Amino acid sequence: MTTTIRVGLSTCGLAAGAQTTYDALEAQIRDEQLPFTLQRTGCLGACHREPLVEVIEGDRSTLYGPVTPARVPALLAGHRSNDGPGTGSVGWLVSGRADRADYPFLGRQVKVTTQLCGVIDPHSLDDYLAHDGYQALRQALQMTPEGVLQAVTDSHLRGRGGAGFPTGMKWSIGRKQPGQRKFLICNADEGDPGAFMDRTMIEGDPHRVLEGMLIAARVIGASKGYIYIRAEYPLAVKALHEAIAQARAYGVIGQNILGSGMDFDFTVKEGAGAFVCGEETALMHSIEGFRGMPTMRPPYPSEHGLWGAPTNINNVETYASVPSILLNGPGWFAGMGTVSAGGRSGGTKAFALAGAIRNSGLVEIPIGLPLREMIYDIGGGCRDGRAFKAVQLGGPSGGCIPESLLDTRIDYEDLRATGAIMGSGGMIVADETTCMVDIARYFLTFTQDESCGKCIPCRVGTRKMLNILTRITAGQATPSDVDRLLSLCETVRISSLCGLGQTAPNPVLTTMRYFGEEYRAHVEEGRCLAGSCAS
Image (tube, rainbow, N blue to C red; front, side, top):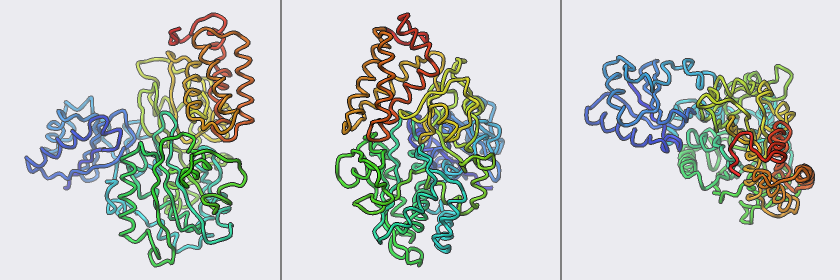
């Protein structure tokens, strides 16, 4: 029986010391000539238990974490004798079942876009091909573009970048545009504090993103694609360049792909880290070599985009969903979301669960799961036995949801009704020691700093809002300041040029709506209810 040992070597694993663990495993396997195969993988999602090591023996899987170099001899000894986990592994045994059902953080997830992250070697095309890699592309090339478009439409896939625009509708608009010169862009410029969905997917399974883009190009008629990714993701950038070179050698990138007559090629564009470049018009300006600043819409990129040509823009997770839709059918994908319950969303959504949560990491769940299940059943509740206070969704553009609304479904419309948004997938948990006024100030500090400055409402308005929030947290504000803050929120929201400014007030408005007593205590009583504002 072959024994394979997988070690997660994504950014989170390496930060936790996974490379030294890998080196220790490699040295002992070599020195003792053990009949084990050592494999590097991406992140399985359980970042809180890194470094993660999985031992696979036939149909038996045992997952350990954190595995330090000191624990390597005990781990190998147990599996060398085929005894499995030893008595000393009780504290670092994560799961002993292939379906992970004995560890709720992993067992309760439904993996689609991340199904191969932590399973395959992201640097190996052969690994990807062994797991049906590029079979969806082959299928798409045998179908008419209209047939592929109909499958995506019927799946109820919506853009995972935050707006939730129906993907099939967006592709249909792009397909109808005249002319032979069309572009495709993958927006991998996630800049939300605490967000790491795109990075994890690309580091763990880069070919899936390429395959999804190739299928989109087949539908729209594009022949050139750009992957816009922040330069702060060196492992992901490296993985993309390797995957593109491998795919080109395999014949799925370049001229006459798989004999279909389709031509398509990729360029990886590294962004300098400006948050505003996540906005699609600013992103395109950056690709064109200009300063990343947004412009008025319409016209929309689908009609007039990169260098004036029709351009389709989706994010990493949207493209990564497409291969599974073709392989398993649009009904399968739609059935995992809220469609059967009268909603509009199909499939799953990945979230970066972080903050004051016991089990942090990348979580992929069916759209429609209640927030309470995400926080408590998967996340394990707050650390150190502290009480839950709020969860912040959607990054600087999102809002804070209190405990009383935790039965809200994780869906675009349901979350929007609370004042928050789905966003690209950032989910930061706050406990009882967190001051919600200071949380609003933190996110507004980020937004104000990242404003491109092109329009006055965002450039000046966010600065004035930040000044008021700073006075409130310092105990120097008056009731009139609160009224002024509300007025500024409305002005910035309705008159800013792009989504950055239009959504900047969201963290302020939701904290004032659900945690108004904390604002009143700061202003009227000169105290912070959470005890975290030193002033």
